[in-house]
Image (cartoon, rainbow, N blue to C red; front, side):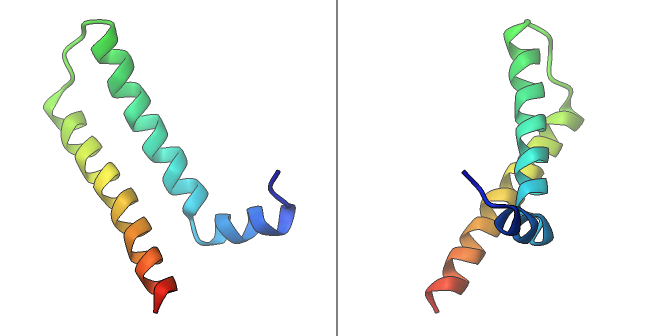
Length: 67
């Protein structure tokens, strides 16, 4: 379980916010796809940007920690 200090640190680094936004966008697209609704092109673009930013920031943080 996460401690309060660790939660505040991650919130300051916006890790939790990034994960929440990414999860919401991915979930929305998956639900629309499962219901058979077309996913608008604008939402597809947002999905690509959000997921790319999420994983890109994870890779940048990982490489920063290794140095």
